[in-house]
Image (tube, rainbow, N blue to C red; front, side, top):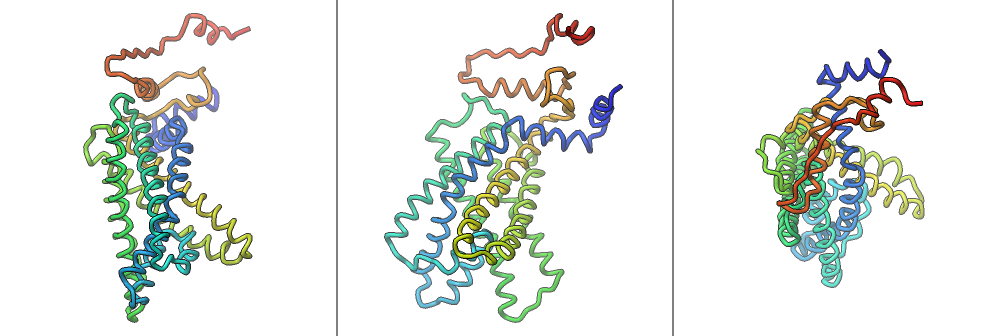
Length: 334
């Protein structure tokens, strides 16, 4: 028995190895990086206008109260550490023309994020194309996702505001208080991700099936905030004006791509758990010369059925190998 065969047998017998490997395999089988890139593209289009729009609205509502405006804006921008320090001093200050333009671009980008999220979830859950929402219904769901994302921003902003207000009034929360707020943020964010995962998919499922991925996505988001803050401190602030712009844009794209891929990976975690798509054959993504597991066959069958365009379209999937293939495998092809 070769080394590869021994490793394959080991990961098939041990769930602690076979399960994460199956999640990673499904992520790449479903072209997860491309799904994440699409979410990143629309997120990039909407992030700047949304944050500038937030600054403009605060400029109207909180005229004459600059301290409150600055505190709220700083709490919101803390959720986007790569660009927060740049936008915090460049608000639109209530310009109605800028608000109109920013609103149009933000709505376009936000709807695109909603559409990209729905596509990612439906691809991961292998929802047949004829069962996915039509263009009008899907955009209605995207609007609902925008509201949910707004709730996500409000929740995280309030928690950040509580921490900053405590420091402003001389209250020291200490290490225990900081960890408590972080844990509370992760739990609340997990609830928001749970809503997003449930709203954005056409696959019928119970709420509890989305809990593991929601917790993973919330923890990933919290970790990325720390990484983004460190990136700003050590890279962007130490760059010249010219290089700082490139560092800002590349940092935002990279940060958004990591966030999007983490969300897609969290979705895959839910799917692999719910459908028991593990263990997978170790070499299944590399070659046809492999003994497929039941999870492999179930995944490939679902992948074919996901491309069904009509309800009356009949799709039959089999994994029978030809006699010639078996002979070549046994005797070796010449």
